Length: 500
Image (tube, rainbow, N blue to C red):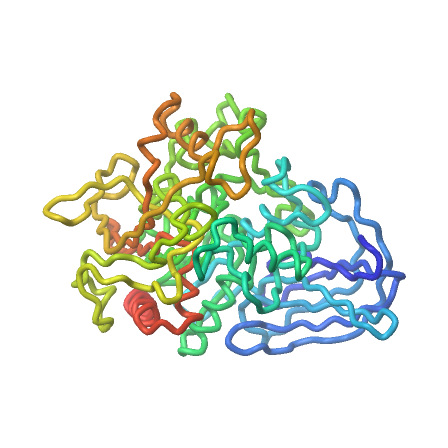
């Protein structure tokens, strides 16, 4: 680690009530570290604080893939009165009278007898996919991401300021200059706009708890490690950027839907990539997340009887399990809105098609009205489906796995990055995003036109068992709650009230 800093990580990252979490620290010069732990929601509730000794440990060259291996500086017992939630761990040292600060986290799972009926699963897999602490991430050539290392700056805490959102809030800003400048000014990871706690789940929970909703919290991996945990809930939530899912995660959620459970995907780019959680530790959780992405032919399961676990996109013809089967939509049929040179001056909201649906009760919205534009709730990454128009209204074709009971309530244009529109252009020997996705959907080249014009699609469908699935089709729904957009707030309340 660099000079005059402090960093740390918790293990395990998810603990049961009464469980123990170890805090692994490295402090410049071996300085003592003041540790403060708080549950963060509508209110910040400090539950533990102390000053603990810590050593000055190097960051291994392979830390991004194999972890830091730092010793535990202290272990903390989760107390019986601590509520399920996201727990912020603030680390501080004093260097010549100036504070140096960093953050770690852990999640406290709910008790088996929790009275709450809503469960939020944090998009922790996506945080780890983008985390570039100690080396590469899955966007810079890495194929495995260690969970046993700190999160880079920006994933767990961000200062206020113009450009904090990756979506362009005040167009035109076609080159994302405001956002990139914000990251550089605050010395945050260049990928910190794409993942992490502050941008989506935090504002959603702050709004929900302020409005009186009691919500339990788990990490992505808990859906794989503790699949029965979901059984006691009526509504499962995915919020923000929930891009990386393992096969067992999908098994858990699809079985929940199959039993009549309700799910609200207030998220985008949802379950686009398959990953595997590997390297189980003595405490049980997997220490490594594997994702070969565009290098899927190097994945050890490629061409084997385990090819269904291939870490490519879920809609890949080699996997044959499009995420539409679960969410109703896919990033493959969506793209970007208000980012880079994709829908740069787009509306930032959904055009409403079926205003008589219960989702819109009490909003005053009518056909053709635009929902959420003032807060740019359609921004960054968007999910859609293959659809056509009949009598002026959109209907899914079902060609991409979208369920037959699927109702399209609102849409907004979106598009994938090409060679000339990408914020980070591909090298000459690499395909553009549009070319890569097309090649995985249709095998042969030359079909890019079939997915070139995508959409963010706000939808709902019913399962044969009577459950309801709602999908916002975009990452940035939670910003409508931050912006106190009354129509977005009312729709969110309609979803929570009806489905929980």
